[in-house]
Length: 198
Image (tube, rainbow, N blue to C red):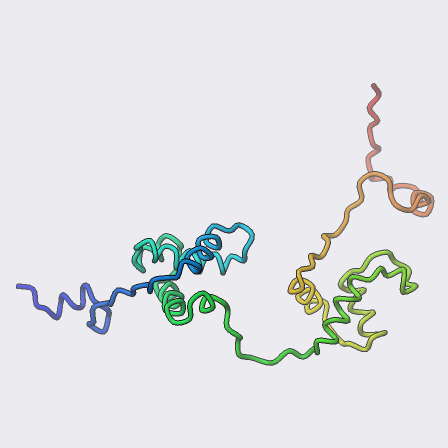
């Protein structure tokens, strides 16, 4: 004969309680429409899409363990977002402010960084045509008096929706027509380029 306490241990939580099925409240038509679009989006943030998919699958009748398996998440994560949606609606799916040290740069300083990154360096009488993170850092520190790291500059630009251009490589002619003369002859260990004659 199987004792009830052993069944609780086998099928319930470790503390001996049966898990309670978490039900989703009935979403409004507006919420359903926005959740459906967000759950299928390929351009929205991955976190937002994942959270919308959790709610959408729960609306379709899926239980927490099935949603967790489908989205490769923990059951606790699924429960958190279902509870927040039930309590706050679509706003509950947004990130909450995190605790920690407040921003050390004022909005004016952040604006200076963004504005400078969008400015052509030649208009500032600088000897280069494009910014690098190191050049931005040096100019901000020496001219503007804003001590900021290159990593922080990169984070500010990404947060503003600006993408830093990948390092350019040289293909074909160099920008400087006198480059070959300035460089001098190639190293003797460099194999000569074969020319194809047609």
